[in-house]
Length: 102
Image 1 (cartoon, rainbow, N blue to C red):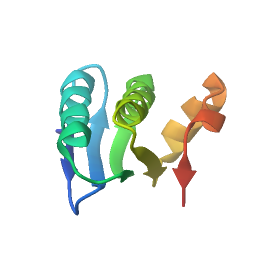
Image 2: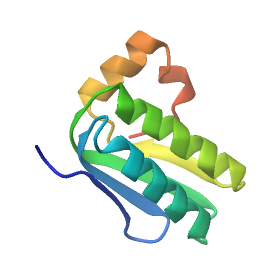
Image 3: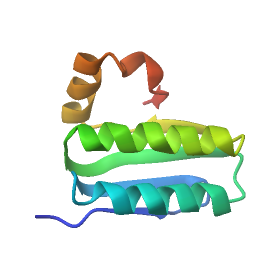
């Protein structure tokens, strides 16, 4: 199993990587929310291009980060969403809710 992480680099950009599942989700949720709240950027990009594999936990994480950003009156967009996450989003009818940029 790969370790998962979320980190800010450069400012206003969160890099999400590894395997997103029930084991990694809670810690990523906590850290991502903390980074958004503590950061000074008014707009955030979550780069998902280094996500190796994701269950529905990964989508729940992204939705939680969106809520965190909204609560802080900050914009958040998603970049590099892997195909497995896109497929889950499509099946769940979440594609329209996700602010995807290419």
